[in-house]
Length: 107
Length: 121
Image (cartoon, rainbow over all chains, first blue to last red; front, side, top):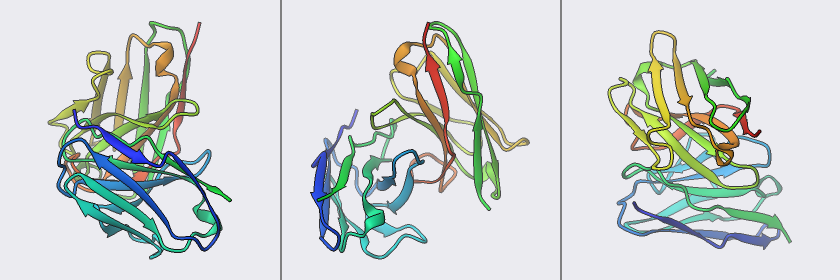
């Protein structure tokens, strides 16, 4: 099975900071990569699909890039509501594996 | 409004069974694949199982194959997860999620609120 590795597992940042989260697949997955945000006690929310497409209603400060095995989620200017845990997921083949998550905390 | 409502969670003893249901509204149910995703306490997300919109193909995570069965009734806009031989490590919040297409090889754009399964003696 293809493994998904996210880094870092956690980070501390301030409001207004630019944040990058990386996701690496153990084999190529083309652009079959999604990003989700999960706030405590809430269901996950889709942010990015097909590696770089912004889901409707998601603020433009979120962006995704990459193809093949290396992917990045970027938050251009961190806002208070962005403090949450972020997950990547590959949908190239089953199992539809998630990365381990990146918790974004307030500095 | 597009909604997913899970039900059927609760406490169960090790070795027991439980059937989760997820009822959808606000979209053409048969046109979308569905998945179940779980989250153990304090842990990350784990994909459990998925099913095509037609119901013709089903998929499972290795640790659930043979114990869990996913199915759907498109006439009732409902997807099910039958869980047998439950173990303590199956304790989690179980979410159902809607895929953007009829097949599972794409993102999940709508999620339910989750239902909690607790496996304990």
